[in-house]
Image 1 (cartoon, rainbow, N blue to C red):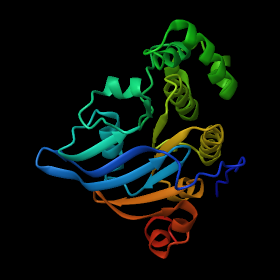
Image 2: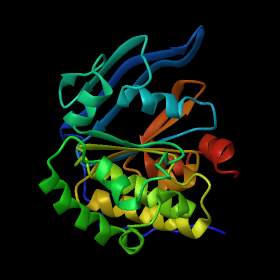
Image 3: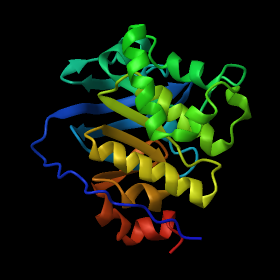
Image 4: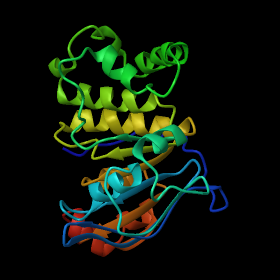
Length: 252
């Protein structure tokens, strides 16, 4: 079944838009094994940038390095013009980087509402109370079930919850790691439509996905990663037409 996505009037993002995230020569290791080999990547304000590649290519390692939970062994990460290469994960969240992790990682024994409120730990309760209404407007099913344990949600509903939790941090940059993982095609379409709506509203997004067609079809800019190195980059739609990408990632 082919999944289609709404294109809700994407905002034109030019190459002169301010740089939000700049990664230069980034390397990272797991013990003696090098996982990232000199990654260069740029995300500009208002862009939706997609990073695609096979399992084990280094996508999640890069996301973890950006959010500060994976040590880097070389290179530099700049966010809003600030060097955050050695900053703690908490400082990165406070600066405006919020991540929706691979596998969602919601807290099953806690209620849905408490899970959402955890995303606002850097903010006042009054601010959090205001924003939670926005999350419920975006994902009405979460409001309907807000007093239930999060572990009782379906996979798609858990992904909605993970996104809502991240948005409660009022991110300048939203990191999305494999949001379609384990979801049925109709739910994938629903999640990706929510992502494009967020960009329309001005959110800057870095999306990591194994589903290359879904990710590149909505991306302003796409990067292809293979064994820890960026091998291709360009406008998302152009990469969709690239013969190497078609053969390796789209099954064409």
